[in-house]
Length: 291
Image (cartoon, rainbow, N blue to C red; front, side, top):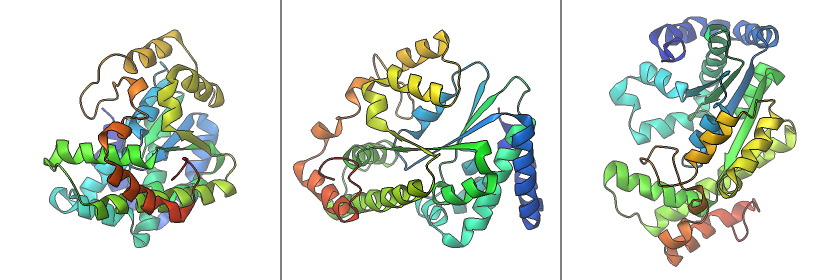
């Protein structure tokens, strides 16, 4: 559907213009200024509600959601077998040496989204799953023409979701307490870093998964107002329908929202929760009591 962003033509554009990336960044700023389209980037750690947040923000009739276009372009860049392993994926995500390429790739995604999307589209919401590490750099590159949003989730809730994902995707039923502690450590390290970034960027917006889950209509109404989006009856009905009743498939955003925030309390053992806490505490994020 979004071949103008994820297809071979865009990948070739990224590669052909890499050595001119300074000029592409400047051109992107100008395009975003004169096209007057709202561009919203949704960042967050995996299994933190990024898809739900991004899709629900793009429910309006003049909005468009583009799902993880960076993953599709990276598939072309690294090849199917080389890139799409968990180890290779996270090696790339965390590699400092790839930073300039990541910035340029996301800049090109924004540029082509603004240029190629239908004239009726006034808001483009993009979730770049692999590019959390370049939040400050992309903000400097594209300027105020893009709204930057980060979503956090309780470290135990995220860990529980990762364990469910391992079971669903790889039939892995359990991992060691040391690995669980590593997940807590990764959560603490990442959110501490993002907190430091936010101190320098008061125009960015932080969202908590639990707030959205506990009161989805009221919290999304606030976000729609903040970003100047139309809070239509169709939008409200869609959010209401997607956050009540039974759950959809594992990767579906259809959920009984009232059960999501504290699901981990029954799913995790006390030893697992304590391991997550040990990993988180040294980073002193103070985002969630006791973690």
